[in-house]
Length: 364
Image 1 (cartoon, rainbow, N blue to C red):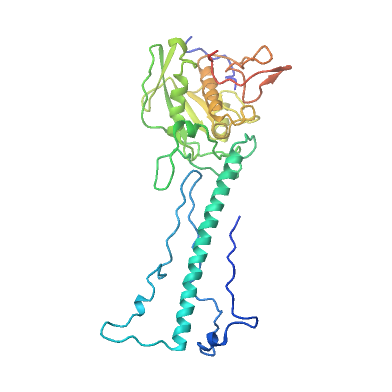
Image 2 (cartoon, rainbow, N blue to C red; image 1 turned 135 degrees about the vertical axis):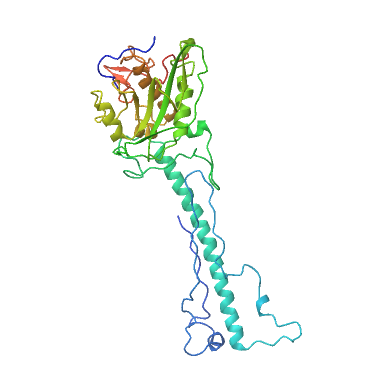
């Protein structure tokens, strides 16, 4: 996104359970029915018998299965019915045998339904994760696939029991659900901690702010900014600059991850309109370099599945404006697009096809 007026440079499917047979063609065996009082419906549904639904967790996590319902014996047999040691065992009456048969059938039914529930839960969970991955692999410029206003934390957030933690590279290769129409709280929190400048060039300090309530991983975002800016292919090339992250004091600028609506408000403070293409900006008249959280989470059509590279381009492009660089385009068909080309919007112009490129100084 352009920085507007001149900016002073700072530097150079389910499982079916077969029904049990119910005796002969005419119904249950007569001796089975005779074991009950006349007013007992042997096929009436018994209370307390049912399946528990398997618990599922966010994509990339393991699935935990709930234990058997309380009161259901997983294999203790008839130990509770055994007579005291000093009394002989009494033969069971016809009614007793029938009742025992019903109880055993009930337990068997519960176990079968629970196993089926586990199979269905696992299969449904796998299908949901597969669908999520398929949806996430497509770059979208409309609302996120999980609906407007719905957000989810990154899988690289702090680990909790049963949740798989992704590495930095894996997390940067994932897309995350966030609506293109979201307007957040407008309140920011600084990502705690700091990162020292690794180089010896002109030192810049920056703070990372994240809008509250986004549901995105602020630590991942802050790590990406530090690694990207201090990469030899970035603005730190050849020792020209070095970047340090702080969380207190007065930094040179503040890199801010914010919802599309909040991004638009801050960009408007510098006379920039980001609403038409839902882009980011350097709000030059303020301290904030605004990174549109929708673009961070979902990417762009121009980069497709290359979300990691797109995020690097996003950081380098907007910080490039803060350093005083304006928009340019590639000059020849098949050339790498300059990082200051508006690559979120286009790679082709005037019959020339440019190649996506996230770096100011890409390696040849």
